[in-house]
Image (tube, rainbow, N blue to C red):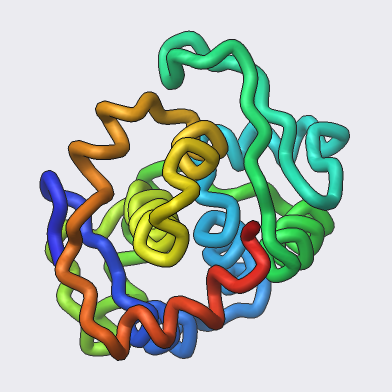
Length: 178
């Protein structure tokens, strides 16, 4: 599904896509982006500033051009903690923005998924959409973790047409976020 031109993946699509990412290191990078919901540039920054990873969360400073907040704490569930830790052990940081974009599209093609709307924002928007769907009573906590104000989050992440099957499968990914 598309939201403002960016593809939001269903859990089944994430599984299919991950099966077609050719290297474990690249799978780990994809998962770290997904489970953190961090901006691509923030994850590149984190790789260079690993002390900001506090095991249960990432302490993200303000990036004046990206966020309205002075600082935020990106919550991580157990899967997020593990994949971010593995990402930080990688020999190389994430590739440049354009390289990741090309990778994502190539993997989607190999997986038989549409490339429409696929890009570096896909994992972030997918994660926030899933969290909003799974934890509707904790919207403020989700928005703060993601670095959004309430209006941005309400405009982009609520009321997406996930099926009952999607919601059941999201539990596997989002379990333990709260």
